[in-house]
Length: 251
Image 1 (cartoon, rainbow, N blue to C red):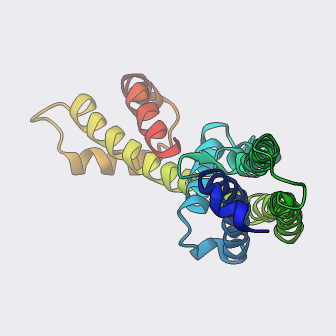
Image 2: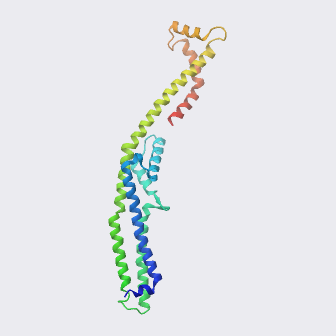
Image 3: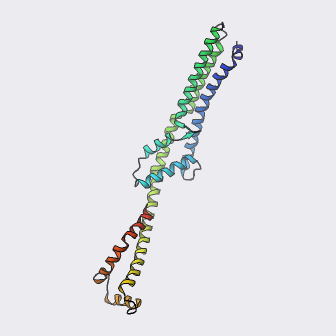
């Protein structure tokens, strides 16, 4: 009964190739999703390159948009962009189904050729068995792997981590950077003001820097009166430089 499979080796080989390809596509997608799901339990120290890219892209959007990031949409778009051998992972289940349909199609063509060659119904039963077993394996593995459920779990884990763990960390880093920038700005501004006051307000050779400092101390100047008139042009002169300094620390 199975002699007909040996007589048509080419058609039999094509049927088995499409069948195995269908099964491999489902298993590959399931393994990749399951690996990423297990890595999401320790996202801080994950070695998965895809998940690290997700964190880097999210941090970039977070800083660029000022923490206004729709995490659900971001995760959806990121999952759609995951590739395996330059094939989008979300397309593998569809490709698997196409391979399975091609296997059934070639089986039907083989049956037609066999009937045209004068073979009996009993002789072509192996082709029907291959189709039935192939469909059984396809739907069984599809149910076991459950790619859609794994994708849903992965999306939930990523969304939870990015919103509840990673985003607060980015906000803390942003606040620390702002505080550090403000401190450096104040320090830099004081140095600029001091240097400019010494150069423009104290006549060279007439009053020393120490005398000028003591004079301000004894007169009780605290930033009002004539000193403000001196500071105003200094502020205007270095305003642009200070703004550039702020952008350097905050961006």
